[in-house]
Every structure is written in structure tokens, then in C-alpha cells.
Amino acid sequence: MDQRRFDTLTQSLATATTRRGVLAGLGAFLLGSRAASAQPACPPGQTPNRKGDCSCPPGTNACPNGCYNRRSDPNNCGSCGKVCFSNEVCQKGECRCNCGPGFECISDQCSPSEQSGMTFNAPVAAVWNALTDAETVTSLGISTNIVPRVGHRFQVRPASGAGSTAAIEAEIISVDAPRQFAFKWLNGPLDEPTTVTITLDSEANGTVTRFRLAHTDPSGASCKAGALVLGRHWGQRLLKDALPNYLAQKR
Image 1: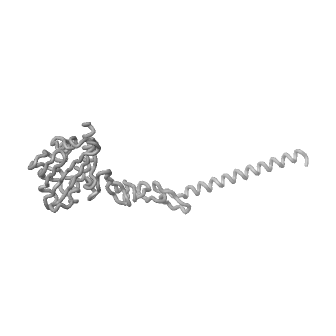
Image 2: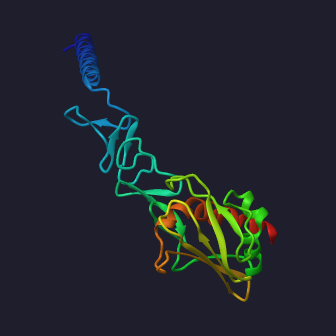
Image 3: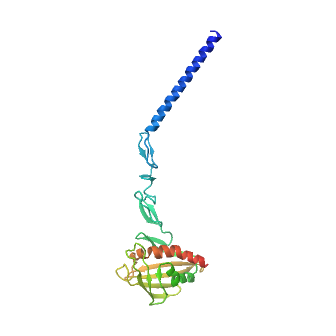
């Protein structure tokens, strides 16, 4: 075969190969585009499987705005859109108290733990003054006109969700300054008068105070129903937030 015929043959083969490649590539592109267009438009957070069905990642559940673990997500706890309160966590699909040291969850409220109590980084005298100063306690919206004097009457404001928004009339029945005082509830959502006793004990060479609050009925048994009333105010607002901040400012 002469040189001219050989060159013509190779050029023909090269052109044919290029055309085949172009056609093959074009076919693959068209098939891919058709397959892509056939994929379903999945809701937020979901992806299609090989069959084209949309699903959430393992361990999550479908909600209108995404995929979430409804057993642990605080914004979708148990069901889509169910939001837990700021002092709660989502556990096994239920909003439960997340109270921290010194508190216990009673009737879905963080209430002072009667068993262990809680500690404040301040001497007993400082904590006593904060709890018995009428101006300080009144400014926190917890009670009004408290004075540590036997026979003195003041008011305790119930927590939201306690079943009643009316102030509770209370009377100081014992004072052992600066370690302990007690007051009796004279009215309110409970069926009979109950007693709240606050005890302060010095620890760590006087630099730390252990606070204990006991709420008892006339028989002396612990009054769990009272935790619902005192929970958010005495528990959350006063003891967990306001009082530590107040004591820190006084140091």
C-alpha cells in the first residue's frame, strides 16, 4: 500500500472513531438528563433511594421542614413542632426538666431539692440578708414585704401554671437568725395550710452556704404539690438565677 492510500485510510478511521465517541457521549448525556429529570423532588432533609422513594436519614423522622430525631430534638419532641421549654430537654420523645444540681423535677417544675439542697458561694449572713430583705425579694417578684419576725404576714406569688395566679398569704412562724426561718401558707391552691422551712448551713470554712427548703403538710410529710407553686419563682427565678447573680454582685 502506497503512502497516499495509507494516509487516507488512517484519516477515515480517526474520523469514524471521533464520530462514534461524540455519538456515545451525546447518548449518555441524554440518558443521564432523562434519569435526573425522573428523580422525585424530595421534601427538605430527605433524599431519594434507588427506587426513587424519598426518605430521611436513619434515626430521624420526617417533619414538614426537615428530618429530626423526635426522641431527642427539643424543637420536635415526640411530634413535629412540639417545642420544649428552655429548662427542659427532650428524652424519649417527652419534654422533661433539666434542672441541674440542687434541684429536682416535680410536676414538670424545677424545685429545690429537699434532700441535697444547693450551695451558694457566699457566707450564711449574705444569703440570709438576701432572702429576708423585703426590698430585694420584692424586686424579684417572688413575694412582698417579707420580714423575719414571728407573726409577720407577707405574700408569696405562685408560679405560672400553678392553677392560680392569686398571691398566697403567708405568716412567719419561727426565726433562728441567720440560720433558719419558717412560714406557713394560710391560703392558696392547696387544701390546707402547709409550712415552708428554709435552712442555711455554713460550709468550706464559712465561704459557702448550703440552702435547703422543706415544704411539709400538717402531718410533717413532704408536700410535693407545693413544688408546682414555688417551682418557677422560688426555684427557677430566685434560687437558680437571681440569687446567685445578686450574691456575686455583693462580693
